[in-house]
Amino acid sequence: MESRLCLLLLLLCTLSLVLASGEETKNDDDDIDLVSFLRGIYSGLLVRDEPFIINRDFEINSLKELGRSADPSITEQTKDKPVSWETTAAPGPVVLTKNGQIKGVTVDKAHIFYGVRYADPPIGAYRWKPPRSVSPWSGVYDASFPRAACMQACSGPITEECPRLVSEDCLYLNIFVPLDVDFSAPLRSSLPVMVWIHGGDFIAGSASKPLYDGRFISNFTHTVVVSLEYRLGAFGFLVSGKDAHTSAVGNYGVLDQQAALLWVQQNIAVFGGDPSKVTIFGESAGAQSVSLHLMIQSSKPLFKQAVLQSLPFSIPLKTRHDALKLGKDFAKQTNCSVSDVVCLLSLSPQAVLAAQMKTSSKIVNPFRFLEVFETWGPHIDGELIKEQAVTAFLKGHWQKEKQVLLGTTSEEGVIFVYGVFNKPVSAIESTVYITAIFKQHALRILHKYLPLYRDADRRGMLAQIVTDYVFLCPSRRSARAGTAAGSQVWTYVFDHVASDHRVWSGLTFCYQHVCHGAELPFLFNSAPVANFTMSPPERLLSNRMLCYWGAFAHTGDPSSRAQQTTFCREQRLPVWPRYSDTSGWLMLNFTVRSHAQVGTRNHVCDFWDKLGIY
Picture 1 (tube, helix red, strand yellow):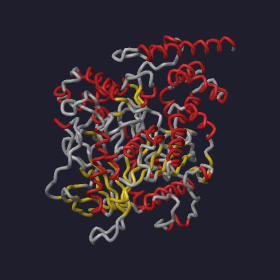
Picture 2: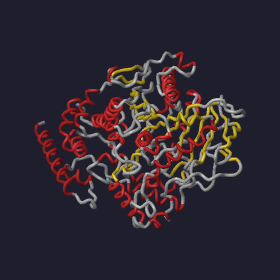
Picture 3: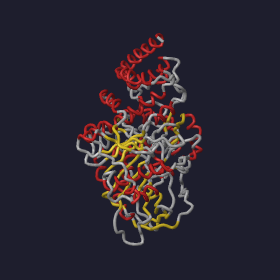
Picture 4: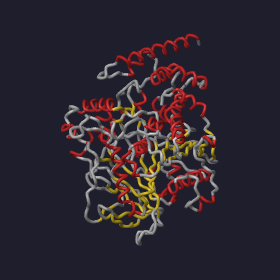
């Protein structure tokens, strides 16, 4: 035991010294192989031979696994092909938008307008350009089936969950309207609008994924639901230079979302929606996107309020420098010069995707280790995005007048840690990883967590650290900062384990844990897609969640009974108090017996707050 303790201390001291000196002397142009570095410290470390990519909507795969199947799995959409799973759809209503007529379909729970183009195709010379206003069309646009998802790749046992078609031509949205909206007569009143931004680590996902089928939530909450596609990976976030005229400058995926929100403002009224009552909501990378729009001034008039589900606050956005470094690595994989935009534009979509996946294997800045969880994504460009989301919330640099729902699941980190480490992690190994991430704070963190975990396998401890540091505690601190600034904030934790001990995480099944994304099949009533059956109490939980989300969309208060459905009024739902120190900082715990409670991990979050490292 003493020898292991001595080795542990030696590792800590050595790693801390090397990290400290490395931060001061490292050459910005040199790549540092963190895997080799860690192996050099301790040869017994269970470090993966292959880098990993986290594809949060599908699964975790090694780069080699993705690379083998990438090209065969990519289907470029050359013309519209039906990809709808509808079998009982009837001819739907026709509406006149600012760009032309659109015809949807009518199904058992909603009128649906699939694959509505909100911007012109970002192809050819427009690959790395901001989205352009959609061109008018003649005739009636067929909105009876979903269009292609944005370029991405995935493989493995749940490949069937991947989009059937992917294409660069992907800037579409879907609209779900309650059945009682009568398009054959002048619309008498307008409904609130809920705009869903999907997750997927900014490299995967789709608005048309069956997990996000919006018809039930639209019908139940009596709102117009919109789900949108946006450019992913290198297509949406490549930075190859600073001049927007001669290079890619990144953040195109965020601009796509803005373009979709602008389209909603200009057109949603003809679908029965109220453009002055738009709620944006999203999970994981979708929640990150929502947080960015709360920070971006040009997004301010495009929505009224927001819901952030499982926002990974502590995964840092890249700096411009690191984004450009990633761009240089990407260009090397394509045999193009990073400054040769003509060469980059000439690449096929499959070549761009292949280079993106190869580049994803590298840690751009090993001293910001958590970036490995989000290689591609928005960066701080100083114009559109000026700072980290958590910084903006703590400093009040966001649209504080807007109401916000903010929540997490109880064990966010499980899916990430067990996906990365497919073998047990010893105390020594966990110490090295914690030190690599937290550097001079590692000893205090180890002192806090090590005594609580006695198992030889420390993945459970690492998962709890990810949950607390990345999700729960910065969310709590941001909610408290917002409340102190006069904002109206409601917080929750989804804490329900499905009756068959498995829930859909958006990645895979989590057994006996409530993982990242576990609330999605409850919110969208998509349990069959997630391959589990809800018990009657779980069905009630799902409906109650929709009561809260619907009340928030209608009134800005999730506990409001105004305009609730008869079902919601009869439920006598537990009051969801606003997050405030005068109420003991109460949050809502979503379980079969949902209830308001004081945060169960407040003492842990107090610890992280005092460290001041969000």
